[in-house]
Length: 164
Length: 123
Image (tube, rainbow over all chains, first blue to last red):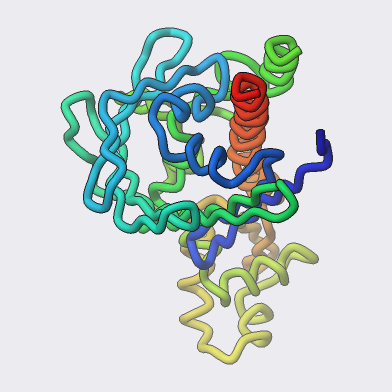
C-alpha cells in the first residue's frame, strides 16, 4: 500500500477560497462512490467522535443532500447541499448552506468544486471551497468543537486508537 | 484560544465577535502592506502613508479598520500616535486555519480506512 499519499491544504484569503488536494490509494470508480453515495459519506465525513447522518440524498443536478453532523453530546448541526453540476467520475459541484433541522437555510453559503483523476491506481481529489462571505468563514469549522471538549492532540490519540 | 458557541451549536472563535470581519480586513492589499510595515516597527500614520501612493486620510481609515479588528494597537508618544501590530491576533488566524486543516486530515484518514475496507470486501 502506498503510504506517502499527497495532501495539500491552502487558503487564499483574498479570493475567499480554500484549496484541498489529496491522493487516495484506490481506483477512481471507488473514490467517486465514497464521495457521492450517502451510505459511504456517512462513514467518513464526520471527524470522530462526531458522526454523520444523511436524511436524504438525491445525487443529480438540482438534487439535494440534507444531512447532520452529530456531536458526542447528541447535538445536531444540519446542512443542505444542492448539486449544481455533475460530470460522472470527473467533477461535481455543490452549494452548501447550514440549516436548521427543518431545512431552513442560513443566508450565506459556500460553493464546492470537486475534481477527480486517476493515475497508476492512485486517485487524486482536488476540492475548492469558495465562501460568499468570510464573515461566514467560521462555518468552515462546520460546527465541530475541536479543541473545545478535547484538545486536538487528545483527538489525534483517540483517532489513532480507533484506527489501529 | 477562546471559543464561543452560537445558539445553533456552531462554533465561532472570539475574533468573529469583532465589529469587523477580520478576513475582510486582511483581504485588502493596502492593509496587508500596513501590516507588513508595522510588523517590523511601530510607526506613525504619516510615516506609514509615505510608503503608499494614497492619501493620509485613506491610511487613517485603514488603520481604523485594523484597530477595530484588534489587529493593531496604538501608543501615544509625545504628540504622536504610534501603531504596531498585535502579533498574537495574527497567530490566532493561523491557529484557526490549522484547526480546519486538521479536520480534513482526520476526515481523509477515516476515508483511507473506509477505502481499504471496501477493497478487501470486494476481493
